[in-house]
Image: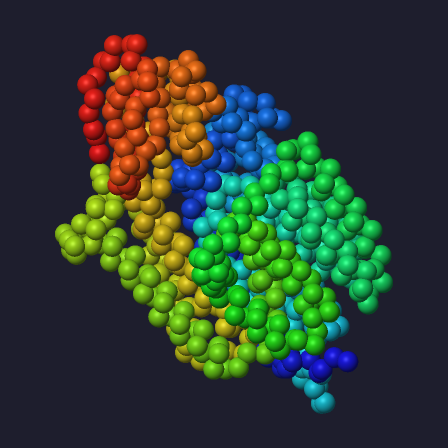
Amino acid sequence: MNLPSPAIVAERGAQRLPRLALLLFCAAYVLPGVFGRDPWRNADLSAFGFMSSLARGQSTWMEPLLGGLRPDGGLLPYWVGALAIKLLPFLDPAQAARLPFGLLLVAVLALVWYSSFHLARTDAAQPVAFAFGGEAHAIDYARALADGALLALIGSLGLLRLGHETTPELLQLLGAALFLYALAVVPFDPRKARLSVVLALPIMAASGAPLVALALGLGGALICRRSSYDSARQFTPWVLTASILALVCALPTHGWAWRLTIDLDTDFPLRLASLLLWFGWPTWPLALWTLWRWRSYWARRHVAVPLLSIAVPLCACVLMNCSDRALMLGLPALAVLASFALPTLSRGVAAMLDWFSVFFFTGVALFAWLYYISMHSSLFPILLANVKKLAEGYQPRFTLLEFLPALLGSLAWLALVRWRTARHQHALWKSLVLPAGGVALGWLLLMSLWLQPLDYARSNRPLVERLQAQLPGPVDCIAAPQQALHLIAALEVHGQWRVDATSALSDTRCSIAVRQVSSTTPIPVPEGWELLSQVRRPTEQRIIYQLLQRSAQPASKVSRSDG
């Protein structure tokens, strides 16, 4: 027997967040970082390399190649980026590829709102009915919780960087959010649920996460089978069919990529705990509070559905050796689950969240502005010295397009703090306004005031330019066997060279080679090759990139070191 609902919400507590304010929150979160930057190192640049290769016709659509290497996981994300490049030839290729992924993030935000809205409309999720009336109406209550879920997702630190990259995980995130929405909406609109589920799981499988899709499908079928709603029970065959479709879609798109690399060393529990601690902040404390306050409702849809969608990515994270990209797939459900804690929070907890957000994010904003002022004036020379030390060779340039959004965002933050602290608000979502606003402000400042030095530090373009300056002349082919994918992508994208990453140096036809070595552990030059030059990335001191030339050819330059 269930205990009485822990949600006690008066009619005034079910106020909706003004739509203009909600749209501004989303715009301030999604748009910064979409424009005016290169693809950044590691996964972002590697994924763009495959997309660029497809768009330029250097590989086939069923087998995208980067330096002769195939990607791990599904092909769907690379098709999306490559199609955007071909359909938007008037844009920079990196910009064109990033636009559809920005729209995917918008879709994830919308799906989280609607998932929370429909789950909050179920019978078990309703607040306590007052003896003489005055409790929140069901629709108003659901809207208020949905606003809170959206703010919780925006405030999640783990989504901040990964959600703004052009990587396969963003399509997987869309599939996870769409699956969550399908299970949430089925009692109210079975047709939308059917369409959503048959898209969600195949999208995840075709993007490189078929096992996660299969686990979600089996768990979702079990929840539907035990549901008290007839439409949900009738939805079980659709979930199982979508699971089968996911398995089928993974085969032609090479979705089966085994990345189970768990390493149960002594540091594993600490690494996992530290990841969980910051990655889901501030949603995980609220989600745990939901599980406690709604502990007699774990079998009901508004708890069971998001709990399943969190448990599967969490297991994948553990099996993939604390992978933050696997854990990201649980953030939409974590935000939905956190929203059901809002009707049960005490004023003391809400005040603690508010004041922590005020002090922390105001400090972050001051830090960003002080460093920005030091880069464009003679004030704070110590701060400027730190920037030049971290990003060797960086020259600041003032642009109004970076300054104005940062100024407007900072003023909006001050107005938001004044609004929240000047008077007591009764809306359910009030406790998440400042955390979400602070994260949006931090990201806006990072992608405006700090965009130039960050792009200089995170892009591989400066490295390619340094390598290019050391070449003896025009080069058609560069060998890069056993090198990181992002380095191969940088050579192809920024250097416009053909890269051979599959042949050993003894077998390649290229006369120039690039390899990454440690500055503390010298590696001898391979037989038949000679060291042409050595360069470093502006922000790396322990890694050296060696430029090699076949010794059979006369070296046009003496060996020297740049960096």
